[in-house]
Image 1 (cartoon, rainbow, N blue to C red):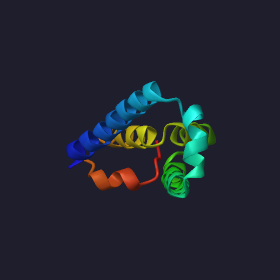
Image 2: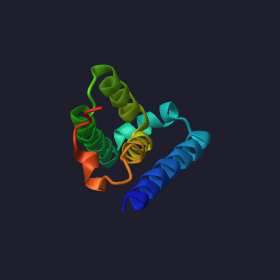
Image 3: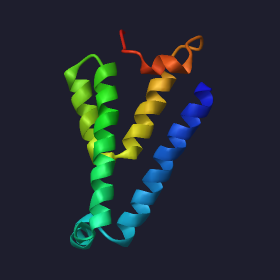
Length: 111
């Protein structure tokens, strides 16, 4: 199960990285923003994503022991979105020992 979860997390991060690069090459975020911001559904999706990023970061803040690490991941999640969420999950799963179940990824880090 851990291997499958790591593959999915890595795939999502890589897919979103590719989509972001491809989209950025077609049009910059700053050039697209006025049209995007004028669309109510686009803004609803934007706020939905950032509420989700905040919830995900709360899990990170629960798991991580220090504020510098928590703050770094807050910045990464808010700047990179699901590129960062997939990366965090991949790293967290990779740090589990072989005998640990995948569910241990939800526990607070002690070491």
